[in-house]
Image 1 (tube, rainbow, N blue to C red):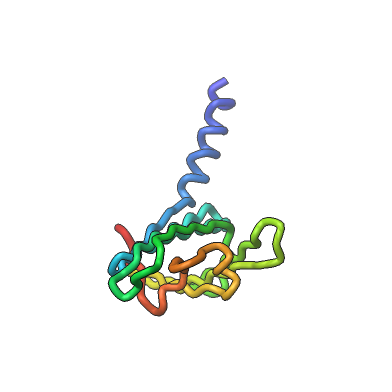
Image 2 (cartoon, rainbow, N blue to C red):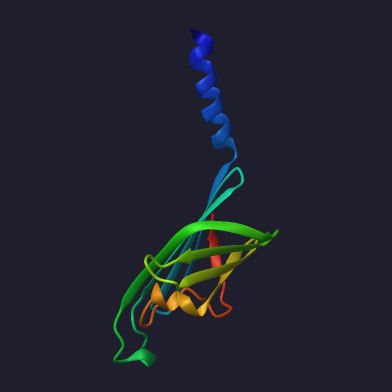
Length: 133
């Protein structure tokens, strides 16, 4: 009986030992970027969200929020690529995530504008999201 209970518990603990979640954030004036990367064994899940309020130079624009999530593939040791198709459409948003020990930078494909409209975009324009410890 004890062996029957011990085996599922050990399996659960072993999968938790290989799981990690990292958060990254950037506040650029009134634009906020958030990135979450979860790794469980070889599976990588990415979630990115942005909240933009118009800056002084963006008068007449409207505030916006956008998010995207999905599975990512490791392109190299420090580069992840997430590709997500818009439901019912032929448009794919591709996020390229460049990681380093202290942060991450995001680059988006042009079709990401279907996921983040108006002021919102996932591209950080070379600015680094800082890793939250």
